[in-house]
Amino acid sequence: MITPQRTDARLGRIVRLLMDNATVVASGTKIAQEIGTTRSEVWRMVQQLRKLGVEIAGHPATGYRLKSVPDLLLPDMLAPLLKGTIFGKNIQHYYKIGSTNSAAMEAARADAPEGSVFLAEQQTAGRGRGANQWHSPQSTGIYCSVVLRPPLPPSEALIFSLAAGLAVRAAVQEIDSRVKPDLKWPNDALLDGKKVCGILTEMNAEATRVRHIVIGLGINVNQTDFPSDLESLAISLRMFTGTEWSRVEVCAALLKSLDREYHNLLEKPGARESVMRRFQEASSSVRGRKVRIEESPGLEGVTEGLDDRGFLQLRTAQGLKTVLSGTVRFV
Amino acid sequence: MNQKELKELIEFLIEKDIAEFELERGDVKVRIKRGADSSGPAVQDTRFFAVQSAPPSSATVDSAPSATTPPRTTTPEPAAPEPSEDLHMVRSPIVGTFYESPSPGAPPFVKPGDMVEVGQVLCIVEAMKLMNEIESDVAGEVVKKLIANGQPIEYGQELFAIRSRK
Image 1 (cartoon, rainbow over the protein chains, first blue to last red):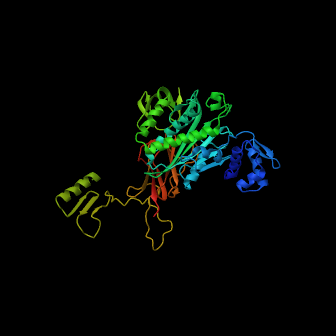
Image 2 (tube, each protein chain N blue to C red):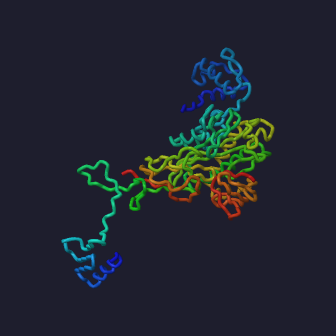
Image 3 (cartoon, each protein chain N blue to C red):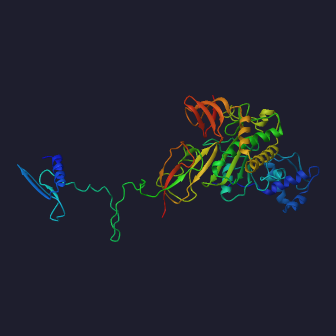
């Protein structure tokens, strides 16, 4: 397997420099001095940025100018927006990667600090539950995984799964209050009944203590269409509102919102109950909806809210059942 | 005289504490001698009384016996847990659904007979789309997988039996 190449941090610094000097043309010499390299190296990196879709005018003789603010999830773009959260200090960006969750789990095993963020412009093996894939085309969605190390026993960590869905909903609503994703247990975010965000959480724990949790979030932001097999299942924020969204803005709002939920759960009394209550308010299907559980053939019934651990309650012909895992499908 | 009658006779002799008895009837001759006498088996019946021999040994002999290693018997299936054996049980730290492989159709993380190290992933327990990697907390041989793929499990439930490496 080829180890995916992390994006050269200097690319982000060039973009940042050009953004900070948006009204003037920055000379190749000045940029080279600022980031400690040569003019020819700057020219090489500008060409690399153009390949990433950043619109930069100019060449070595004239200097450079940004034609528009690029919507790339570069650490230099995000970090200033994440001050005061646990997510601003260690952001890793990849142009192309198999799966941000796999990279984050691997890094966590190798002692990556809490709050590490893994972002990619494109995933070639974006993962969902089981063998499901997450469709991850270049620079249209947000493919983001974060490393958490809550000082909790593993049995108390399930709540993060529900809280992550709430964080996504809050982030999107913060940017456009008309957009209120409907949550489907445990944490899918739906618009018009189609999936706009999927979350996959992975945990490594000792019997009594979590070592690390990786929460992976895939958000469909600026897709204008989906492959035919996903058409009836997926939607993007752009398809819902008809306008283009800033991925940088959505990603920053998401990480701030996640940070808030995380701190509340660790520090505030009653935070678990709050997550449970808000989830049930934000989900139209958690009560009174006829559903089946895809992975459990024959398990079908009407939803009856959550139990105190957050598990879905299902009223079936055989009585009340507790759903521990699985995909909820409406029938 | 059948075996039942013979048994009743022996019981009678024990009850009455008779040390020696001899009977001859037609072509049947029974001689019973109780107590510690090294002259021969305590019970003898030249025609009918079958002395139960030791069961034929099903044990396998060490394939490479040596002078210093006394022959030792092992059970035919070395991987089967013995009640007397002190196996380490790996338990689930959460409630959830048991998965033996990373994704449906993929080969299982481990199977009985595999040697595992401390920290090696044995299975995944999923709850609410949170995938919990369950690691082995001992090094040794996986003796038994106790849960079927896709089954719900409770907090603390035993998942694998492992014979820890000495």
